[in-house]
Length: 134
Image (cartoon, rainbow, N blue to C red; front, side, top):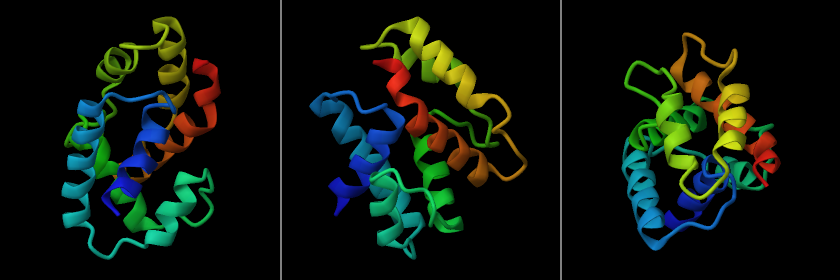
């Protein structure tokens, strides 16, 4: 089960690039920590999310995504996206100019008062636009 949650988020946040064992272990740890905080999470919604279907994402799923982004330092505790850090991390094995364009596009206008909604909007955009990294 933990692999499902890590896979969902890694496919979205890391833009479907191969990950090292260390990156996978860290992501699994983040996901497990967030699962402890969101025990009522609907597993079906995460499966749909993994498959690119964002139609049934509920408030718990959005807050799970916020937790994961915060654990990965892609979002701070106040709900602000950490674009410089995201660019730094995603540029490790991708063309930096493409990563910068993606981050700029997916952070424009997605930050709202509700940090769970901000996390969801950013993740949805990263998923939708991940092909731009290829």
